[in-house]
Amino acid sequence: MDVPTELKPATAMARIVWKMRQVMADRKITNRGLADQLKKHPTGISRLKGQDELPAIGSDEIERIRTAINELSSPDYGECKLSELVKIEEDLVSA
Image 1 (spheres, rainbow, N blue to C red):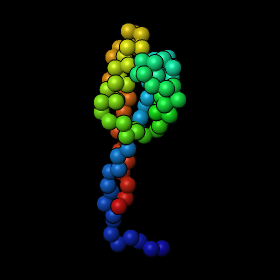
Image 2 (cartoon, rainbow, N blue to C red):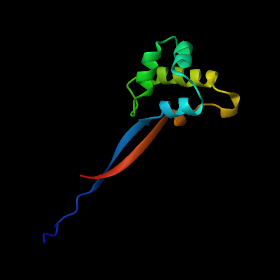
Image 3 (cartoon, rainbow, N blue to C red):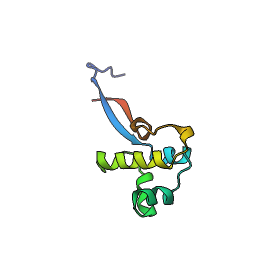
Image 4 (spheres, helix red, strand yellow):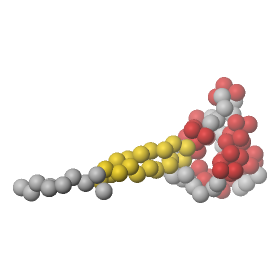
């Protein structure tokens, strides 16, 4: 049996998870409702919502989405914060 002579250091790999799908479901917001609020086509909202990782849309667009979600949500849900839409997952990987 071979025994490794040296251990490889572990490095952290980060992945930014886009949670728009879950936020919209929890707050009962439809593609049409958000599309109307943002003046976009519902198909574009569907594509954006379907992403598992943060799409390259820029911080201004993320803020517009967050604001629109707040406007469409029942006050019972409270303010939608950035941390509700985006999550950073770090995995340790051997180099």
